[in-house]
View 1 (cartoon, rainbow, N blue to C red):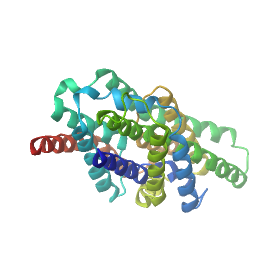
View 2 (cartoon, helix red, strand yellow):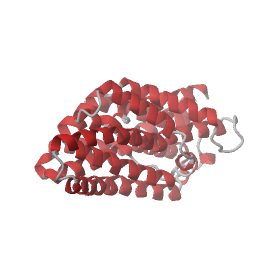
View 3 (cartoon, rainbow, N blue to C red):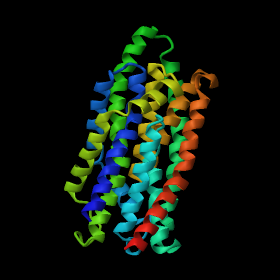
View 4 (cartoon, rainbow, N blue to C red):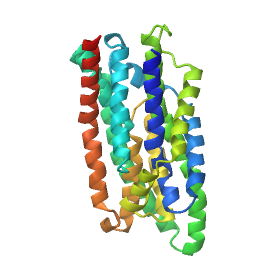
Length: 323
């Protein structure tokens, strides 16, 4: 049990390291905050956000694979896929979706452990809903809010407007980090709790306060590293945002994530903030977005499911036969 819990915490650490930089890429790129200041905002926001509700944790812990059909090997194997894939992608500055890596790893490991009957259809309906929210609401929200903000601030001198937008971005960055913790942080809290249930430590799936504290602090520690390559990739190379566009992207993404969290829907915070940034940037024209970088991101997102699913399946298959 302890080894599996260690893998879950390692995955949570990687989640904070490779995923949470999405929350602060805009404020760093627009120079609303210095990098270290932005990281501190992200750390605090992520930790606090992890305490927001339990619905996503319950979905991950009970509605993706049947708890009675899997074991600790299943959960450990799923974590291996996350750690390997996210670490490899981060070396190239590519923000991966730990949410999709987790779901794919659980699916692959669950199939190796108990076959197709281990999967829960109801939970996967929420997964597809989350995919729609992250892509559509992120892009539309970022574009729409950027257009509205620019329209109503058109008569304000740019220098003055930028100062106001940068100040608001700091608040929005905290909200974005909070929303990240509320959704992504809850996913690993759910897996941690499920491990305690399968090992007999807990009689039923009931998230414990100390689990929330432990997982949120570990995620915050991962966030403190910064993920600078990812910040550079999406904050300066994918699209160069003006302060008003950065604010629009943050508000649009945070609102979409919190909406999904309230429904217990696990979604990719990476997809949400990146599509919101693309949408906000596109208000200056399609050419404002570096579609070459977007292509890299989309390919990484596309391969997350098969790669992490395969790693989870093979790891579980090997461990089962080894035992």
